[in-house]
Image (spheres, rainbow, N blue to C red):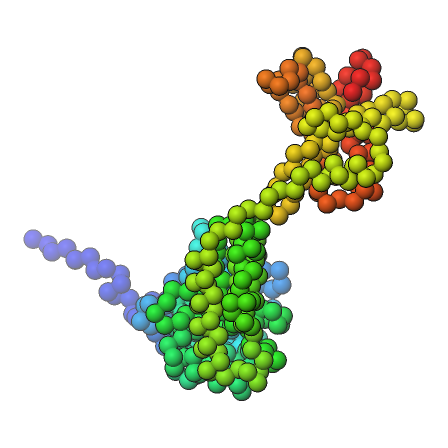
Length: 453
């Protein structure tokens, strides 16, 4: 019986030197110095997980390489450019939006790591912060140093993201701020008292240089704005008041808390009250600062407990008073004033109306001035409505009014909401604008019915 040879896998009979571990680099536009850097990384235990040519590069060629750190826990991205700077990137996930991430981490990272560039991007609703080092020469030594620098930068970003303070007495996170000796002493004292620095914002604009503090045993935050001349300490409170009510609520603050000011902000419909105590540099001592923070706390407690001020009564027909003083001829018809205008250039006339009721939008009080463009028991056609309501106006607009219990016709009116404090000259301008526009639209809508409105 003849024995057949047993098949042996080719890998077992090929010499080890014939197995190409760098097959993924073949055909890639890599310079010799880039290959040397990749060889050094491989020797140091870094594992390549992706190698791909970037064909979107405008100048020269580029090769993108993803690495896993020797412990397998970190992902690093390299980009080797033949005609431009190469880059070394590490990234972390951050909770902010892209714009907020730049604002929070950008200046701090630049101050701490001048050679590191912050790049932020968003994917699928998540934001990533990238620590990047750009290399004009991607030699093995430079790449290794960039890996170490980005590692330290990512650790700093994680510390900042998670609100971890620097070691006690270490003010390195405040290096970008123009602190005086007194201010530095205050921050050291605050840290010893349990205040934790959770954010440092250092912008060129003095109004945007501040430190956010978490006081011990409390869920509120203190904002410390710094400049060479003074330190401003702030606390804020969101309220459900209108802007007028919030302003009325803050009126007792200067008397009850000398040296404290209060401001009301309307942040896209959300009303917020900010209390502030400002200290000159000579007044900036640990004791004065802690006293000011305590006073802000008492001020916030006062605002929370203060009774809600009643809304200010709306003024009664102020535009009517302006109209009476203007010497224009009008007729009082109950809830409205009616004025007739004769237009010599068109040989037509038109009525304008001023509504006596006052409408309030937060702190703005207005009264309606309008002119009828359509008034008929017959509903306007869909085509007519589409044509009419496609018109654009730099001031004012059109309103469609369906029949109701108080009036039986379909109406279209052109109206302007006029501020109640407008002067006589502006009132006359508004009336002319309303009646002229109303008359023009009436001619378009009902050309066969004559001049009736």
